[in-house]
Image (tube, rainbow, N blue to C red; front, side):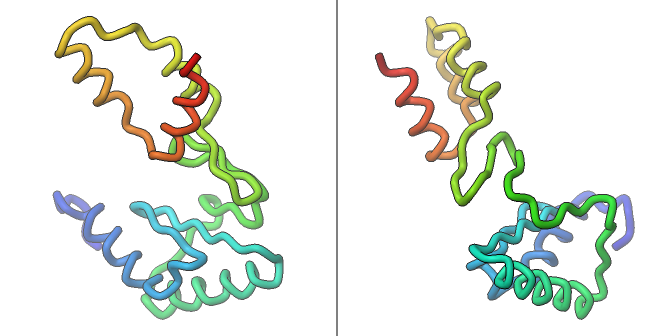
Length: 131
């Protein structure tokens, strides 16, 4: 894909989504990140082969230095993913707890804009905030 296109990231993301269509049960795509998750090692190897074959057939390549394989846990997009569970990262929770109380409408809007997290994280954070 030529560099300099103003919509190149969206175009590439759409291409990657098309490459892994049908793999939604074990594969998630966000921009140029592809997460492959499995319950067993044999399933994981099979899922990797499926995705690698699709990447090859699409004429794309992977850069080994940017890949991480067989991770039992990882930090991704402000969350800690481990053993099939997703948690907000501790520093994100601490930043929310320490956020100053909004005192006017504009401050509430700023707080809500800052609070750009998933419903799962929100549920966990609220359970820690409510006294």
